[in-house]
Image (cartoon, rainbow, N blue to C red; front, side, top):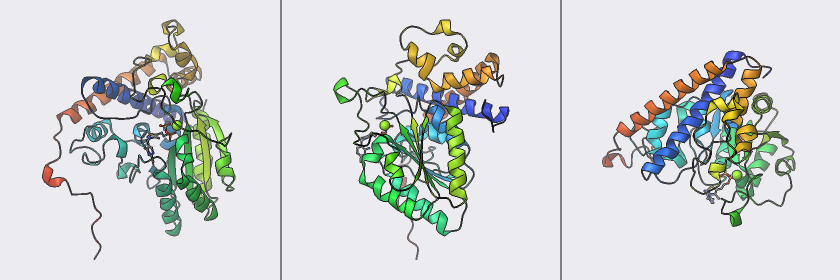
Amino acid sequence: MLPDLEPEALVVLLERMIVARRFEEELIELAGDRDIGHFHVYIGQESTGIPALSLLEQGDLSFTNHRNHGHLIARGAEPGPMYAEILGRATGYCRGKGGTLHLASAEHGFPTTSSVTSGCIPLAVGAGLGLQRLGSDRVSVCLVGDGALEEGAWHESANIAAMERLPVVFLCENNSLEALGQRAGEYPSSTMAASDLTELASVFGIESVAIDGLDTRAAHQTMTEAVHRARSGGGPTFIEARTVRWPGNRPIWPELATGKTDLSMAWDASLIRPEHAIWHREQDGLLGFVRELLDSGCVTSDAALGLDKRATERVREGLAFALDSPYPEPEEALEHVFAPRGD
Ligand SMILES: Cc1ncc(C[n+]2csc(CCOP(=O)(O)OP(=O)(O)O)c2C)c(N)n1
Ligand SMILES: [Mg+2]
């Protein structure tokens, strides 16, 4: 049981985790039918980002990367304009000019998104500096993968964040632990000399902690402490969430390797087939969270299925809205691209 969360709040977390999962399962299916360009999915990391980001408040800023879909859903973004953005439609959050790789929504606390690996780090630190200088108690959250820490931008930004005691939380989702590497045909993520990623932050004197990315409670609790530290002038925190790479994320193009998630597997183990059994039994944070909520009596299996039905309908309605939406007019190509000159 998550100690400081009411049952209603836990159900909201579960619903967001299901929406994030269904959103991307539909997306992968769509990509099988039509060419929508390259994209990355957050499947398998929901148990980190959803509890961590859902606790942010209005005015808190977050800067994410190429694996952003779950992060936006965590902060309340809607499937319709997200799909529209991915499909380049005028009704997307960035009017179709950002696509999946630069999917951002200022109204949900994502001013801009960079898929340049590590690009969001200086953006988040700069925003933290701005918030501090303005005397605000808002925080800036930097969402990166382990690969981003290979870049020089990490070291410069971490140094400044530490020296200035900036209100920044670095949430690094390390999905390299299970990766078999390039020779096995997998996507390379990071190759580090450091044996422990937290050392890359603690060397600057930044408070650093590693958590199990499948542990929803740990993600929520650690983020709560980090945000409190940032809001009260205690400076930055680095959280490394050790996550398991979803089998469908092993090839460069996402595949529905484990099929569409059947939530019933959480309470009926006889539905788990031998293929990917370890994933379904132990490594899927969504199924794990359902089990946790069932055990603590927060939801029943019927209630979980009801949430799933609602989430799936919401996602499908969003996709229909996006597919029905127009492309931007060619005359709009240069609108909202450059900041207006202040005279
Ligand atoms: C500067 C730069 N180099 C290379 C790439 C190509 N690229 C896209 S995702 C990725 C891996 C990033 O790894 P990580 O930050 O750990 O994120 P993950 O995909 O593992 O979640 C790379 C190298 C890029 N986007 N930007
Ligand atoms: Mg990675």
